Amino acid sequence: RSRGLGDVYKRQGISGYLFGGSLRKIIASAGDFEIEGQGDFVYTYGTEKSWPVPGLSVSGEVTGKPTWMRVAIGPRIIYRGFYDFYPYTSLNFYKYWGTFTMDQKIGDLSGQEEKKMSGKNFLSAVLGSDYIVTRSLRLKGQFELLPHSDGLNFGFLLGFRYLF
Image 1 (cartoon, one colour):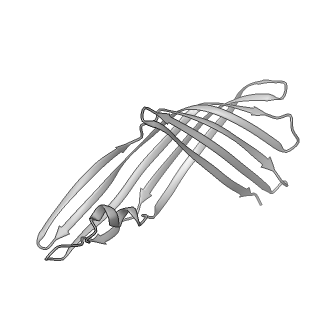
Image 2 (cartoon, helix red, strand yellow):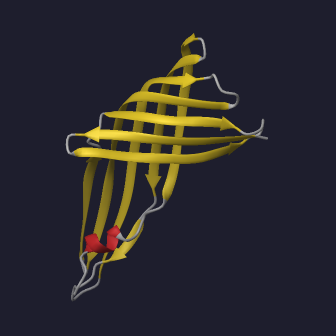
Image 3 (cartoon, helix red, strand yellow):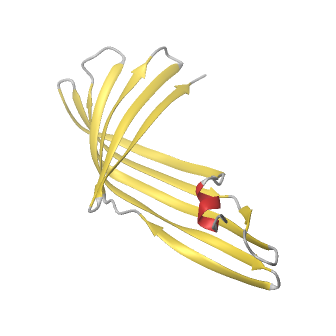
């Protein structure tokens, strides 16, 4: 059985460079609760990766390169009533988009195709917490729901930050 290019690509990832930033500003507080305005931006510049094209009588190769961006903007409600443990929730405008560029070389023939990507979501709901272990070490856990017309996607994040 010969495998198609889609089968080859599905089994292998593409590396790249990830850049991003966040802005947060406290806009209101009441008792142990704070409301922040927040904005997150992530940009990924993928490196090129090549795959052989199977099942041809001449040699063939495809080179792919992804580039994508994500923006999330909205309010974040934080509970500050616990010592060094801060649960939060947020509801965000959410946008994901990008391109995947493919260069094909099969024998003497060559071509290029660019596919545009766009997420089906425009909203995300987040539930998470920050935990300050020491002045230098902070832990984070987050669960994200991404509803769309075809169903529901989700993501989670576990992280730490060491300050020195």
